Image (cartoon, rainbow, N blue to C red; front, side, top):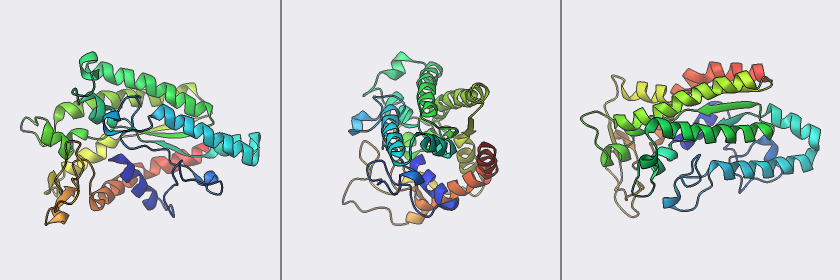
Length: 281
């Protein structure tokens, strides 16, 4: 869900085009930025593999190191280090470690191995190591997203007991353990790494405020017939009144909702992001 929000946020912040992916970027574009995202991937290696091949965060970092080597070859070691220090890194990951791992015991045993709190602890321990790998590759300006209210996604409300609530509160409670630990990690990183700046972006805040607002009169359901993985079944007729549906499948919101989310992101985070970039320059 967050990848589309990231792209739209880029548009609202003034980017002319999407950042090219690792697999498609050419040498003329490398210095402008690279997108390493992989659908269904997470912090943990096994996350999302029931859907097919993906690149977990550690593999994405290996790809980043490949790009770093290409930049060094292009401009030299010192100019490359200077360039990487000035780049802005935005990491949006973790929701799949719950939706496509912890909360599907038919595929993974993590929910029987860990309580929600201990699972968050294990995730943050691994994530902190991955963030340090990024830091050691030259990253000095890093924004880390918390996980949004995944218990409000149509997939969650369709397949899990809401117990009379609008969302599956137990799922949102679980990711809150992760978010609290991530926020503490950001504080620790800023204390330990004086030459870098990290910020935490509260993804739960804007999602909860939007869905709880008085004007929120749409249903949290998808507009298409979905398969067991929450994706649209091909060649099926979608809902008639599409503008009244917030999601087009069981995970992904329509652009109109994404734009509303992104406007809220900008209003909440723009001052912090601008200050962050200025202080780190």
